[in-house]
Image 1: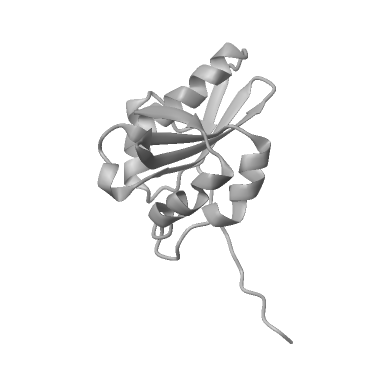
Image 2 (image 1 turned 135 degrees about the vertical axis):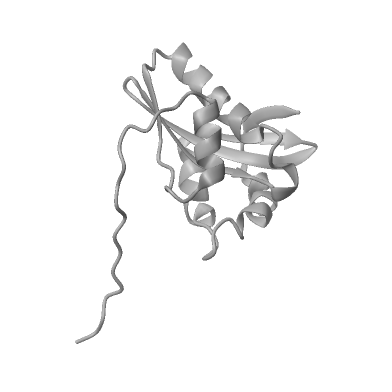
Amino acid sequence: MEIREATSFDKNLVMEFCKHTFSWGDYIDKVWSSWLNEGNLFLFEKELPVGLCHAFYFENQIWIEGVRVDPNFRRQQVASKLVMHAELIGKNNNALFSYMLIDTENKNSISMANSLNYEIFQKWNYYSLIPTKN
C-alpha cells in the first residue's frame, strides 16, 4: 500500500474505475491532463491504483477534489488516507484551512468528511441549463 503522485501511465487504470462514478459517468477523464501537469494528483496503490485524489494548494488553503475509489476497495479508508495525505502536505506548507465540495446527495463522501472532522461551511445550489437554438 502506497500513496504516490500519478503519472501519465496510470490514466487508463484510473479511468476504468472512474467511468461509472455518477449516473452520467465522470469528469476525471476531462481534467486528468491538467491535474497531472499541475501536480498533487495522488494515487493510492495496492499493486495497481485503487484510489485517486487531487489537491490544489493556494496561499493558506487546500482544496481537495476528485476523490475516487475503485468500488472493490471502498470502505477500506482509501479515500480518508488520500485526504489525510493531501492535508499533511498542506500542513507542512503552512496551510490553515482544508476544503472539499461534496454534493449533498453523496452520502459516502459526506460520511468520510465527517469522520475526518470536516464541518459544513456552506451549502450551494447547482444550476444548469441546456441552451436551445432559436
